[in-house]
Image (cartoon, helix red, strand yellow):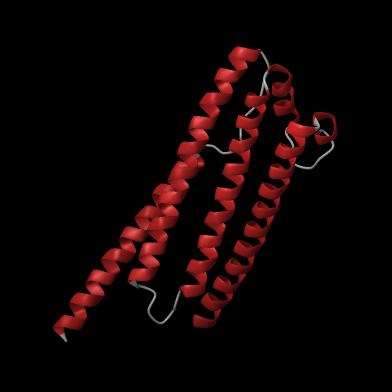
Amino acid sequence: MKIRTEQILTFLKIVAWLAFVGYAIKAGAQTVGLVVGVINPEFSEKLYEVNPLFLKLRQYNIQYFVNAMSMLVFLSATTAHIWYMAIRLLSKLNLKTPFSREVAKRLEKIAFEILGLWLVNMVGMTYLKRLEKTTGELLGNFGIGDEFLLVAAIVYIVAQIFKRGIELKEENELTV
């Protein structure tokens, strides 16, 4: 049983690394697209991870384009950071004593960062809807939905369960 758990955690660590690298590349490509889009919008159409719908905003006002692309960069970078936090959590997890204050603290931080990601996405979606009304262009969305609120809640609940596990462990140690 222990070997299977260790294998699963190793596999999850690899998945977390792949997700982290993928989102870091995405954030970097979007940053390049933002800078090039400000300098040379015709060339930026050919770049990876530049939303062509957002390039239309540049025709109306360059600030619309900068704001929308900056929001995309922020969301991708934050998602990469969440995956990095998951990597650190998996690296610090000790299967002999999984209920530790450090693990509970890291889980709670991840939950709050996911909640922050969801909140920033909601603000960004509101901004995009306002731009759609202002410009008449259909801009789509950032690709992050309400599921992030659910994930944040689940991770927070798991963090609270870990905290309770730590309390029980400490009570048992005092009783012995």
